[in-house]
Length: 315
Image (cartoon, rainbow, N blue to C red; front, side, top):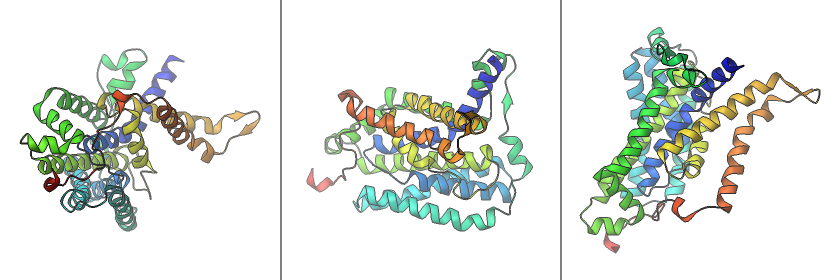
């Protein structure tokens, strides 16, 4: 029983890792005051170009870099329109999702017939840390994972420390709250926004590539299955905290894993259709967000200038 629960937690972490990358990318966006609904598109771009590099070159590092850069390229389009041209952030994000979905769908015709190199599969396979992986219950969950999972945890703690203890993190938090005041104090608002938007796009690209390179290991049409939208919702759910993002992503992974396990279990003498069970994590996300909206504390609110374009001339 304990072993079964430990295996369940291990799979839950793996299932929620791409969500964690998406949430961390979304936090980078929104802490800088940028609302980006293009997470799904950037994740699909990362999944497609990461898989392309993995199937053709076979170098794991190059595949990851290609995925991240693909996400950053999508973020660059968004940044140019919304930061430089002061375009509508909501509409631009939706267009970015449509763009990323179209590019990934177009590339999928070739990618589906191109298997990954064995070097990619071995690089992202599960690794067991001696002794630590034998810890009851949580050993497999934390210490018997692939390097992609461990990197996501490191990034979450680094991002938390960055916002809490560094001058650059304090500056970007100031920009998210009041860009005019930050500009008056000598902070280059435009540069900070561009850097954090591109970094957020890079993480979203990594999240998409985790699916195609590590978790699934082959190309599937619409491989993210709405993970980008869930990530956008969880940015609010975790109250823009990188450490809470870990718990949110793993909770989603646990619900997804539970739904998968229940597909063959009869309930009141009937087998529940898999499509209905697959809806459980998404329904739970909506319910939690509604409850949060009813009891949202002031200290957990997002950046005050979120979604508002900054016009330096109006300062």
